[in-house]
Amino acid sequence: MNRIFFLVTFLSTGFQVLVAQDQSVISFKDAVKIALEKNVSLNTQKNNLYVNEARRLQGYAAYLPNLNAQGNFQRANGLQIDPTTGVGSNVEADNIYGSINASMNIFTGFNRINTLKQNNANLMAQTFLVKRTNQDVIFNVASQYLQVLLDQELLRIAKENAETQRITLDQIKAFVQAGSRPEADQYTQEALFKNQEVTALRAKVTLENDRALLAQTLQLDPSIPFELVTPDWQSDITYFDNLSLDSLYSIALSNRPDLKQQDYLVDGWKRSMRANTSGYFPTLSVFAGYASTYFASDAYKKTGGPPPASFDEQFIRNNPQTSYGLNLTIPIFDRFQTRTNRISSKVSYRNAELTRENLFKTVKIDVQRSFKNYQTAIETYKTSLVQLQSGELALRTQQESYNLGVSNQVALAQANQAYVQGASSKAQAEVTLLFQKILLEYALGTLKIEDLP
Image 1 (cartoon, rainbow, N blue to C red):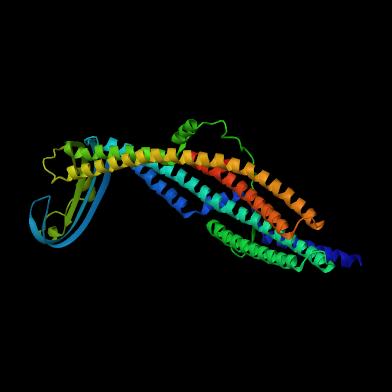
Image 2: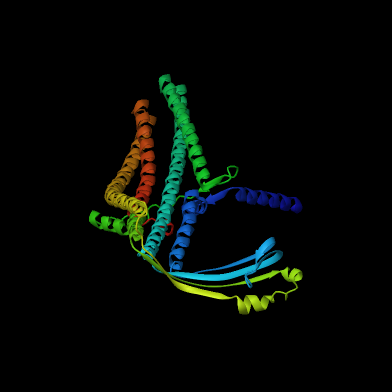
């Protein structure tokens, strides 16, 4: 008997562990972390960041000299000119040439310094774009996550109300059978009960659709169910109460990554315009080179002369040559290429300035709208608490009055409807309050995964 009990206990425990493993529990912060790891747009911007880092490194390397080596080996049959004697003959000859050259720009019309500053500005702009894209991902996941939580709460309210309507229907049936209530009350209550069942079914469908959308965003396996954890939305609810709108403007202008990105883009195009002006200036560079050759043919076999000198004697001792000097280039006419490049970058610079001015105004509008909505959400939540409390009291009172035969079924249905509306309003107000707080932090540019509940 003890063995059977132990076997049953072991199997039931193993089944519970298996079920627990098949269903994952995802917190608000976990969902954001998953999205940040798998989001395509964010990873694309991170990859583009590597390109900008490489361009910045190239800007620094532009101050270093170029260095290259060249080698050539040739075997030919036919008329050949012996470089050692100047005599030509039909022979088979080997010719080896090697050189190493270096050059360095001294003055490029301020092109290098402006290109370097442009690359630095573009790198910083891309860095802030990655940061803003990170906030975009957090904001989108938060919106979908909170919507699923709201759907779950509305489904729970709908199910509880359906169960309440069923219990009320059973009570009314008993009253009708006892002859203390008319049959019309029973039919009315049956309609209310069925209507609430339909409402619960619709709430379930909405929940499943929003859960599927969140699972797609997080790239989760659709065959594995998951459970969401309700965040502590009440934390820091009064954080923004003591802040004025002007102070929020200052916070946003100091923290918005997209605004900082645009500032660096403006500076980058300004540097590009100056770099393209370098075509009007002369350029100066210094160069140096070392080269040597080796030539050998079989002409000595036909003429009876001495064989060619050895490789070491020719290539290392007799034939080496060095060269060095300065190269000055003065532009005279480049078919308007410099002018066109400068105009193009100048227009891009002006357009970037226009975008920055518009974004500056947009940031203030975003902060103002988000702050007002956040204040409204707080007041709405406080009102929903009173509404729910009143709905509960009214429903309880009407239920007791109906049981005593004092009120009718219509008043009871209205009281129940007021209660359901109050419960739904409270659930929506909770989620809206948390969402508006996140939206305000998003508008301020301070939204970070570390601050999520």
